[in-house]
Length: 88
Image (cartoon, rainbow, N blue to C red):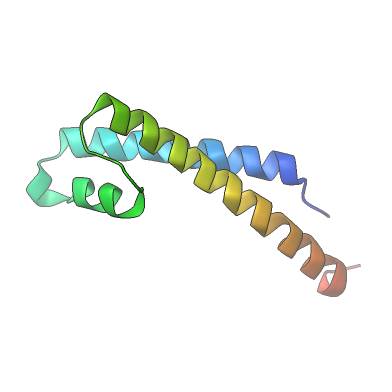
């Protein structure tokens, strides 16, 4: 079975956007000394600033685009390998 690049890219984009929102909520609920979410998100998302509206929107967009990128790269690789070595 071959994967559809559009379906996987949108799915991964939405998954990472939802994950970003959950990470921000977790960071707001749990004391910072127990998680370090601010440091983590600022390290993996370029130009992201913790607890600013612009930073939140930018982080949400970046997370979605990372997911789309993963889908765009993963699907052709998967489909190629599946055609070459997958079960017939």
